[in-house]
Amino acid sequence: MKKILIVAATAGLMSLAACNGGTTNTTAENVADSHEANAAAYEAAADNTTNAASEAVLENAANVEENKADAAQANAH
Image 1 (cartoon, one colour):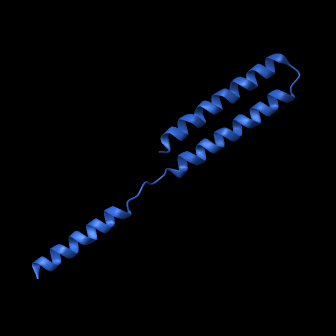
Image 2 (cartoon, one colour):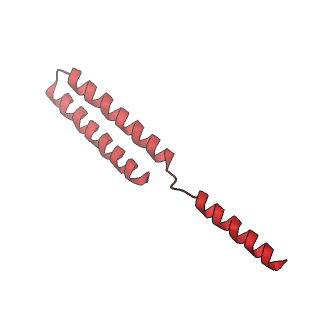
Image 3 (tube, helix red, strand yellow):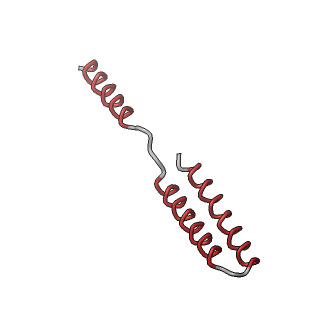
């Protein structure tokens, strides 16, 4: 009886380990998507401005958002 119980427990643990596939961090992916959307909005605003200083500020803000998106994607895996 003990052998059957041990075999059943081992089989259960093996099947549980097999189910533990690669999980993804969807929160980090969502954060990355949000930063990418912000970057696109900043770039669009930079394209629509006529002031060179404002354009530079908006482009820098877009670059910051793209860097944040890259960092979030790196943490997603």
